[in-house]
Image (cartoon, rainbow, N blue to C red; front, side):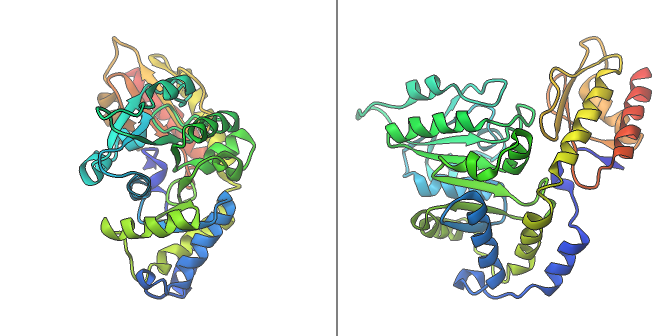
Length: 342
């Protein structure tokens, strides 16, 4: 099976498995696990932050960040297509009592800075307090588009003027940096907190790291414990994260090149349309109105050995990642052609 459902399906590399087997461990809740501490320190340094906190997932990192920045009844501004708003089970509201204020995401993944400024609540007994802005880079539902360093700086400047915190969901921040030809430290510079996933394009089996100031991370640690994220001998999985940061970042450009080749091949198939070429590793494409549904196409593809997701009434998504080779891309394109002929 050529599995293009997500980069979350990547398998750990042999060097990761070896590091996991050899990892020195301890009880991380007691802060006794040296491998977890090493991963947290390494990730914080890469992002230009003071400290890091190992979490089980990107969803947990985002939830813990919101709980740390906000109090019950506060408001958080986020995009209406943000992962935090769409795919995280309403956790901030359900578990934190934090009110989400969704604003329209633009096709490039941004929220207009002018829209953010208009949405900031004035001080009034009738309104929740606008406490936090959440951005996502790269942006999943907008096709993996990277948000530029200039935009991130503008958003951070706005947050600073209004004394509002800025959290960056950087699940695929390394993909964004690779696409923009910059580094993650530059993209994360203005954010008070940032979470990065190790288990997507970087291919570790599990885990994210939430980074910020030492004070922020100290408070976030309590909320991680509250939501059940206090792990014990977690160095076994943290070891793979260290290998991921050391060995998997530079190869992300290969995934991006494969995504573009896939998009170009799909665009040449009658009945399929690629609205815009991918900038990272996510390919979004559409089917003609008079053709089969995305669910039908996905089912046909799966029967032919290619797996991906239907993500809308006329839209499908394919994601390239470690383990998908150029020959896999060629085979996938050929399979698209066969499937659409029927």
